[in-house]
Length: 417
Ligand code: GLA
Image (cartoon, rainbow, N blue to C red):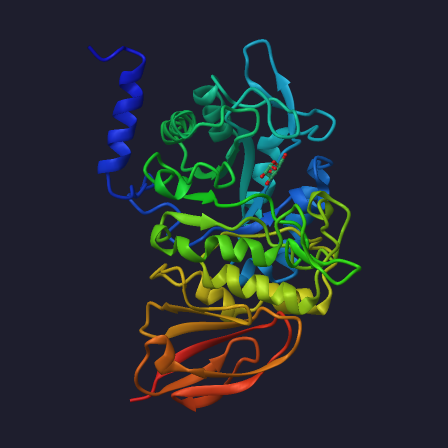
């Protein structure tokens, strides 16, 4: 006899093993998150020090800066908005931070043509110690729906470490969202430890974090004073790229690998991304983050101050040619075809028959590189359109040029008939 307690676990395992990647449809019968969600997230700039005023200002800036026109749509509220529960156990916002309540804020955000995301956790308390949703999944999902929430980031602090409990808890919230009466995208955030790419889509998630929190730095590996390579805690841009390179089979329309927030434009700003060695990056490195997050179909969650972006930051975040690759409707995450200490070459097909190819100089020194398309399995001749220069820079079977240290060149390849 199978014990009563084990039965639901067995059913869940069998369900996930035999079910193909689930595609969650909205109430109009359309796929939820057909392309990776794009927006601005509160966490890296404000930490828990958020309030309705700053969020409204960011919504205004998203429109005024041209970000909305470039495709950014969501304002994602992260941890720190909660203010406990009322005597009927309804979750409440902090009345000091959100005196008008979340519904009024959602109305404001919607009036700008944008969407609003919120945050909770699959335990009693969130990572920053605020009220979370365990055992209140249905009630909280209904509350979020009644406020007009469009997206939920669901964290995993203070929860048991095993993968089965995680699947059960995430499925419970995914089901609650589907029954809430509103279409709410569901972002799984357990940081990759339980391989969510194997199950998060099947339990009803549209995306899942794959790594630890990104810090505002290039790499865990730094050079010590006595010239030795040392590994430090805290994931940088390159670490997260390396951890996602082999996850391409799991990404596609409605189910995405989430490489965590963009640190572009933070320049070491004192906030959560400055912890664990997050000293800031160069604009070249930020451009590489944008290039690779787009090549690999990540969610694009900008975190710098939208009211005060310099020209370089705007140039990176508003580049429609690179965003078009992230939002390509084929939704095929780039595969790493060449990988060594000096270079990475990533390749992906695009919906209109073009290819996107990215070449990263992993070293700190500029290098001359010959990109020979035959070496990455592409026969024939192509136009090489450089998406950062916005012009065609070569025609034929190869491109030769210089790549600065930590720079990524991205080309859109169009076949020449
Ligand atoms: C975790 C998540 C972060 C952020 C914080 C909030 O660390 O991974 O993205 O949401 O919690 O406390």
